[in-house]
Length: 192
Ligand SMILES: C[S@@+](CC[C@H](N)C(=O)[O-])C[C@H]1O[C@@H](n2cnc3c(N)ncnc32)[C@H](O)[C@@H]1O
Image (cartoon, rainbow, N blue to C red):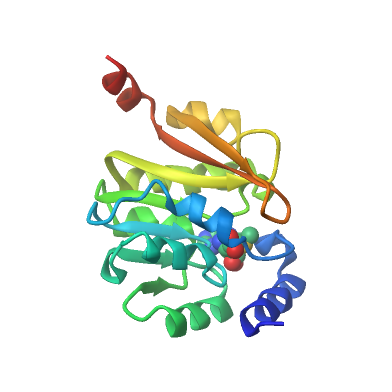
């Protein structure tokens, strides 16, 4: 077993609610999460990177390390991320605090957070922070293992955002689907 996987499983036993996944994301899911990103498009934040499966694919898309900031609550994962991704800013802080660091300047937020198992008020705070930090035209990328969209309908309406859903990624345990959220107002401007 790889060192990253044994760390993941050890932390899962300690913090099952925070981690809420049996294994890290597969390469196929991680690549699908990073696919909406374009190199040179500006700063990107990743929420809940864990052992960094999605982080690796974000960098492989051409996002420079200096343009990537990670919000990860688990200190042991932060140590591993700092070791594996030199030049990337790793913050041992909750994703909700992204709005303190960025105001309308991020090109994208990529979230590996277990949104479905996060209580709705906390989910609202996380999504609200993401959209405060995102610049006009910016998007939030989020996956889910569930059959419904990952963001609760009440939260989606309160923040006035809309979802686009991708295909199901079967090469993941369990299979997952990627959603991209944008501000409703920006979708109507594009459509006109
Ligand atoms: C399901 S794991 C995902 C790991 C990784 N993104 C992947 O796909 O393999 C969720 C991660 O989110 C972190 N986490 C949970 N709540 C968080 C929050 N509010 N802010 C930042 N990280 C959080 C956990 O510590 C854990 O590392």
